[in-house]
Length: 389
Ligand SMILES: *Cc1c(COP(=O)(O)O)cnc(C)c1O
Image 1: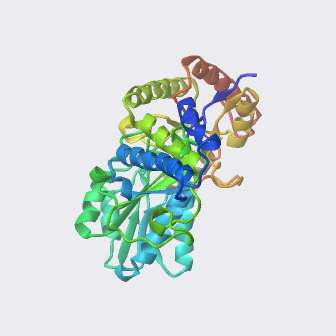
Image 2: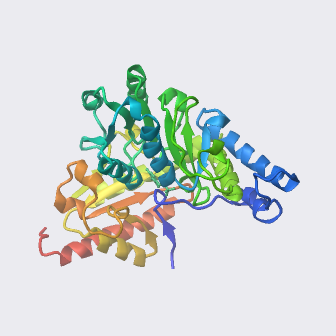
Image 3: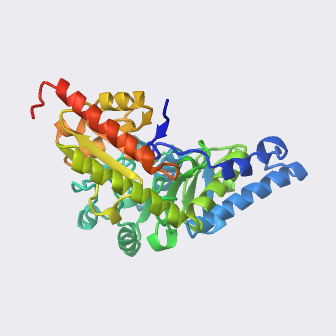
């Protein structure tokens, strides 16, 4: 049975070099990094190094990096913690209508607590309009959160322009860069963000470890009460192997080889997109057509007269792993809010599949996927009462 993994935006494989960097921290260097003896000191050294690697990768300082247990946690903490610590600056939040559920639902939670939230619309490519953002700002706006890159359709926002504007207004700015780190250059100074979320398993690091960048001087409320870890803001015994893995993975994903890796992924994706568009009819390519405004890994297609779930299962039978548009909406068959926000007609959005390429994919795999995709889409359409050629 073939095993072809085209779901790199859901998670990525653990890089062998990352695994090797982590291994000693499971076996020999098992001390609690907060302990004051040599076992603890050794573990802490690994964490300090990872903090430096993480900071360097995004052009931050080590003391601006806070380790968390996931990208979801970083998003929750950023949104809830920043507004709580800056209540005196207002009760209004601005975000977009295509954020990850961890951010979206943190905003919904705050709405229940009395905060006001504006969800900015996106155009058909999944990009917000800077004027809409400017118009949404009031004298009560305390925080703006705009994701750097989208997990479903790969759209990349103009974070630099947004950051510049918000700096001039002295409004806090958070970005969910979980999909961006490792895929595009991320520089917190250039973006002028106050807070940024990232997650190791999206760039060939381990699952269950993330980080929040918090600019020096920005106030945030404590997220977990307890010990003194993470400047007393996020307690809990350090996940030393995980943190060490994050450090190694982010170093590799942003290091000298990164440019070539990204270019290879882009080429494969572009080949796939052009093959699908020329060989399958009634299909919409979701997200930006301008390839500079989308992640190199992402190809999201909506096939008319096809049920996305059926397509996903038939591809799975051929050993091909992809994601349907509703993967993040916890098993529901409703079209994803991201696709609906782009104005995709409902009859198309039910037939959406996200193909996300990674560094391990090959041209041969891509050809196999195209061949099977053509055949399966055709078969499903023949079965559809709505379809006529
Ligand atoms: C995966 C993802 C998250 C969540 O990260 P986890 O570490 O899986 O919790 C948040 N935002 C975006 C854009 C993502 O793609």
